[in-house]
Length: 173
Picture 1: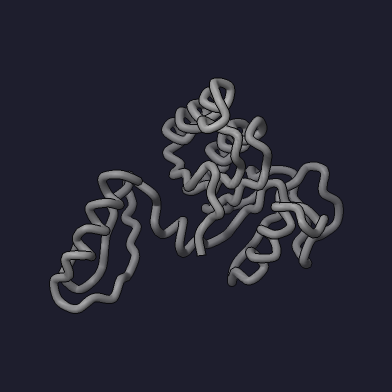
Picture 2: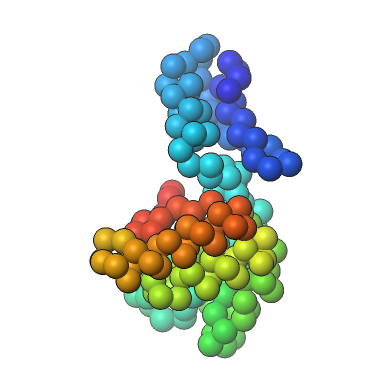
């Protein structure tokens, strides 16, 4: 934390930062810094200012989560990769790719069902993705099997140093 309103989070060899406007020594900024560094470890740059986005489970079908995520991602001013090995052609003008490993994304929007999520997070790790947003439900809140899926995600994310927003999230704006 610096008094000029900038929060710096050190993560691995690099530094992620998020500019926050404040006046003087704002106690709320100090609280935010403390909360982010101690509890989340989220890569702020990859989450709020990514260079590129992969939408895993992208879909051409209106009403599906993968289509909704693409509708939002198309507003992003950078590369967007609709990832779906079953996808053909393009969605919102973006050509489908088979795997997140075929991208250089640093943010993955995971629009897949709970049972597919651990494998997707592993693929994200292999691809070097820094943050994954997991929209699906059906994890710890759904019983023992869901708890096991959530633990697999946690373990894989820790292994690859991926920050996770979710599961059961509507994402971020």
